[in-house]
Image 1 (cartoon, rainbow, N blue to C red):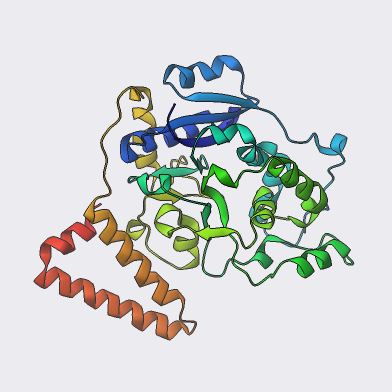
Image 2 (cartoon, rainbow, N blue to C red):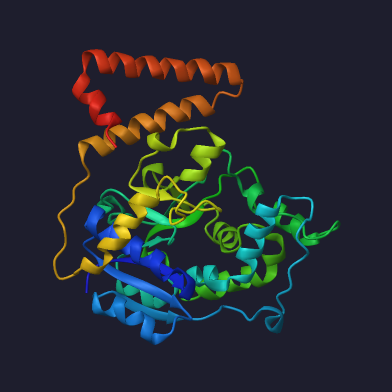
Length: 347
């Protein structure tokens, strides 16, 4: 058994998605540790593929049984978009997301470190740095993603939301739970029970993000910021900050939200499909040797600082001129350092 574990969670509707994920991790990152699928109510016959590849299969079921467990959400706000209503309903009724709480049970202390990845992810580069973590690491969804974004009142007069506001600084950054890397010494005997307790108490206030809000509560002031290189939120950069899709790059591309890479209309569909097709060739008895290339470092560094500067400037006209300045940098590189320019532009 390896000292390091990579985990994904999937239900029967996302078997192809998790195969693509493991394939991109295997071929593009050369992950040297163990692989595990936490299989949420997936029939045994559909798990044979994973076992045949040497992937550990850990069956798991629902954390609760809806109304039978006393779980009853407030009505979805009808004034929000149909897309957002669908998004909220998906998180409420698909209990597979809550299985993330089980990552923090003592059985995972068999490994020194655990890396969790959502199934709507494409991995492009080495993940070796994430096996060296000490503590709990995650990345924010964006610069403006705060604790306040995670919670909403469930009624006009809601004493629980007042309690949340009194216990937690709502201006503090919040993390995205789609990529989490941690050393297992953070796992306590009661971690799983405490996460469930927080969920049962505050789930009605976790309007959009479900388990993510609870994990932010549990790791409040204890989580460490992961480099965005390891969790690029594609929809945030593309739709929120108007970054061209071809300029988005990183070790981990995360497609949370509605726009998924397995949709044939997605600009990332070809890349996703190529990874999926190669999944049958996974053999954990031998691993590709992958290193974090200089190009991947330079591309991400340029992408990160360029957009960090632009979006941190509120006035739109300043964003435009700063963007033009970076455009001039590109022209300069093309003229005087063509090899570097071509490397940066290469798909």
